[in-house]
Amino acid sequence: MKTVVNGIQVNYEFVGSPSAPVVMLSHALATNLTMWDPQMEALAQSFRVLRYDSLGHGNTDAPRGPYSLDQLAQQAAGLLDALGIQQVHFVGLSMGGMIGQTLALMRPMALTSLVLSDTSSRIPPEAQPLWQERIKIAESVGMEPLVEPTIGRWFTPPFRTTHSNIVERVRRLIRGTSPLGYAACCRAIAALNLTERLHTIEIPAAIIVGEEDQGAPLPMSRTIHEQIAGSELVILPSAAHLSNMEQPEAFNQAVTSFLRRVTAT
Image (tube, rainbow, N blue to C red; front, top):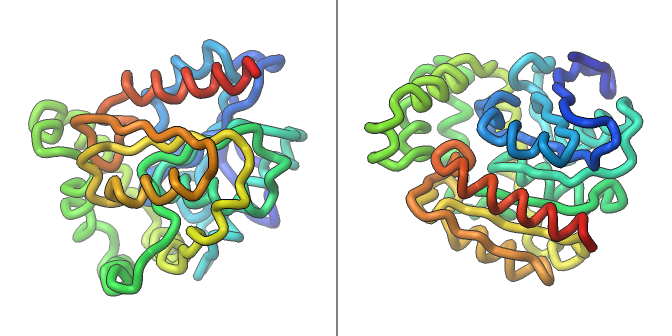
């Protein structure tokens, strides 16, 4: 389904009982809403699940950038407004987690709780050349040279060997991402600097991270956990950056148990 948010056609899917609390899912850079397929059945049992394609990704429009994280968060907030939704439990992974942090700071009343997975609250100066190189490659050559390096960061070597079908599916997601949208979102990510503001987030929060995540290593999640008072930290063994796909059962258990505790209070 599509709706217009701030002049942009946004692609989304909405499943589950209309009377259930809403969980909103925000995907990683260079993927789309189908990244959340391993979570849909588990979440839809108790929640109404809203997943969407971020600006420049999937079947959402990819206007010329650069984008900002504020703009990406406004897209999420605008989608909620368009659908008449007052509050959601927000689950974001990687770029989606950055959007979640920004939305929690920008519009806290829209969130009942926050799950941040395999993400960061700050891109340090020493990492800037990496992001600029990715932007340069996408804009000059396209996505193909980025596919294998990204796969190497996103999954552990054993998983790449034993689950080649899932890995190949993610290759197609990366390859199919708009270079324009990818580069514009990379510029937004490169400007990420929220750590010092996270202490103002007061909603229940859980931080989930793959123990072997190279894209957003464990210390980044520990920093977020330390900054958000009362937050939970869950470390998933044998998982890298896309922990929701590499360890779906453990990821689903972490998310659903957290959401049940939040909704029970």
